[in-house]
Amino acid sequence: MFEGQPQLEIDALMKSNPEFKQLYQRHQLLHKKVTDAELGVLPIDDTTLHQMKREKLAAKDRLIRMYDTRSH
Image 1 (cartoon, rainbow, N blue to C red):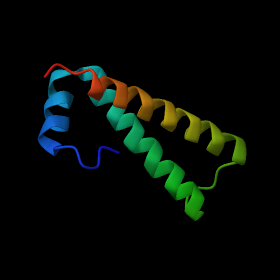
Image 2 (image 1 turned 135 degrees about the vertical axis):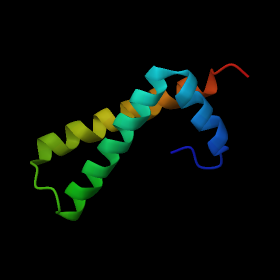
Image 3 (image 1 turned 90 degrees about the vertical axis):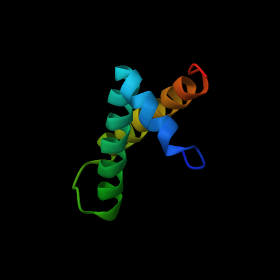
Image 4 (image 1 turned 180 degrees about the horizontal axis):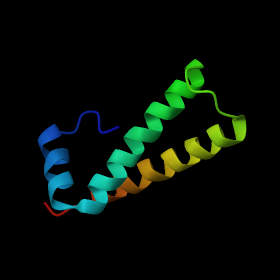
């Protein structure tokens, strides 16, 4: 998600901001579930899959806003 960004900055933000860390972990979990569902490994209905995709996108948008507005 943060390709091209220094991993040290992401790690520091996760350590200093519990909300960022929680949201980052939630996004990672949703990413895995969506991928598994699309591969057929995780059997879920289309409605649930679309809901997870929306939640994942919302988390990503929030994470990017938090990253962009962090203290430098």
